[in-house]
Image 1: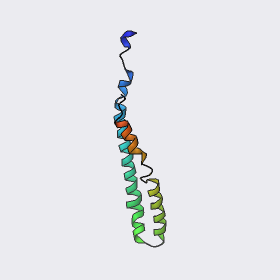
Image 2: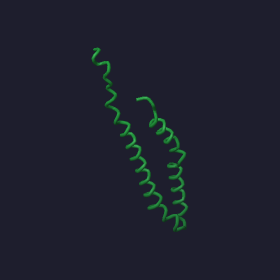
Image 3: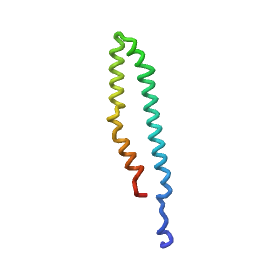
Image 4: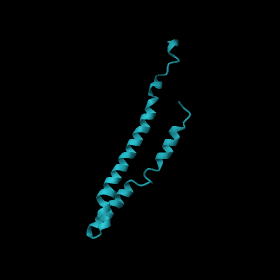
Length: 89
């Protein structure tokens, strides 16, 4: 058993960090696409057109901005910074 003491089986998991960063980028892209689809394409023109539909459009846009606000994503840079520059390997 002394021959296997220097073997680190977790070395094979080193690529999972890069996969995690890729998944974060994919989620950010999905949020950006959903923002475009909801605000710019669907409800934005209704809001700019005015009338009775503008009130409903304003409610939907405000709700969407609350759900995708910077406050909801605020812990993300701190989490990325703590995992990117960690000294443990």
